[in-house]
Length: 103
Image (cartoon, rainbow, N blue to C red; front, side):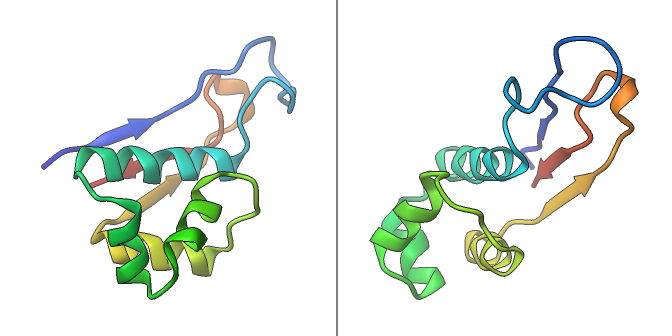
């Protein structure tokens, strides 16, 4: 079983993060999906077929240029045969409040 835990460290002091220096939650999720696909040698065309969408739609989603809905994320994760877990942490612990495990 392969486990990938992604946690981004933020720069600077305690308090709210500077949104210009960190990736968004959407970017983080898309990066995890792309990582999982690489690790399991899954092509975008294969994902598209399992999601019942066009390969162009998968490329559009994975480009990170749009706000991915939870429904779309659920469809992607299900099609990949994976599970995604989310954890929240306070800003002042030095870790972004999102952490993902993909198994």
